[in-house]
Image 1 (cartoon, rainbow, N blue to C red):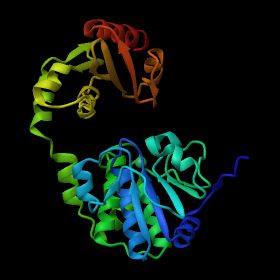
Image 2 (image 1 turned 180 degrees about the vertical axis):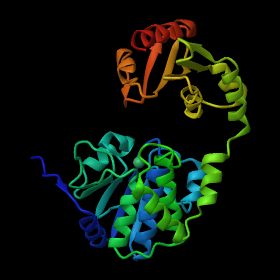
Image 3 (image 1 turned 120 degrees about the vertical axis):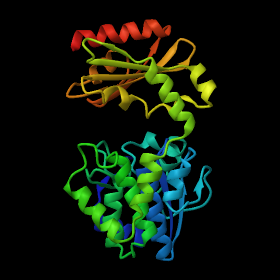
Image 4 (image 1 turned 60 degrees about the vertical axis):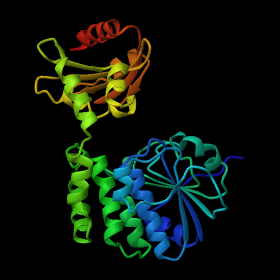
Amino acid sequence: MKSIKKTATVNDVASLLLNADKIAFFAHTNPDGDTVGATSALRMGMLQLGKHADIYCDCAIDAKILQLTDNPPVNKTFDGNYDLFVAVDCGDIFRLGEFAKLYGAHKRTLTIDHHGGEYYSDFNCVIEYASTCQIVYEILLAAKVNITANIATALYVGLCTDTANFLNANADSYGFEIASKLCALGANNTEVAQLLFKDTSLAKTKLLARTLSRMRTYYDDRLVILYVTQSDFAEFGLTINDTSFIVPYAINIDTAKVGVCISEYARDVYKVSMRGKNFSVREICGYFGGGGHKLAAGCMINGMLEEVIDKIVRVVGFQL
Ligand SMILES: [Mn+2]
């Protein structure tokens, strides 16, 4: 029989946490600053209250994010019995990756998240703030945790990550309000800015220079296409996971309505990231079997590089 999935308020979550002795927090696969900042802040808070708390994630976490979130130990293999499983910043259970099955089978589960979507936990605290870290801030206050400078910095990392350092449309007054409170509590905002939004590796900068030097534009520069090949990755010692920073350089050109970054995934298989400016690219990516949001979507396209570029130029041309 399917159990009933309940909505939980911030106060409900605080009592669920206070009533558990041993808690496992799960960050999502391909972890970002919000899921790591939120799980780490929750763990620090629970340790302060004398509880046992562990973090699980099936992927490696970026070293800079770890450094800014108090270097929490993160387990990749499951070990132990817990009173409560908490999924953090996961809109659906599959985002838990290799831990999804284990999570679904546990006796007591709780989601803390800011994405919409169907409930998959026994208790669900879902508030559509810009970041999960803002919900966690409220939860920690409700649980009477003392927000230390380290906790404040971890929460600030999540808020900055999910608003692209307050550049995205989701950077609202409540985000600035929490940011102000976290800074007053000692969040190291200058270090977060330096490590997450200024520093780039030399290899990535060289890859960017190469990519920009062969930029293609179409339809009076309204469509801008960049591409990266396997031989670029080999030359600069990078992988396809290092390309997500490139597509903004296409869409941020002032004339661009559609910006594209094509990355060679395997021989004759390309991963396409598309961005729109006041223009939905979801349908275009959907046409190629992909999907995503209105202004940020993606798909995979087979063929040789020039064929892939031709296909994109043609399909975008119908819409522009
Ligand atoms: Mn998030």
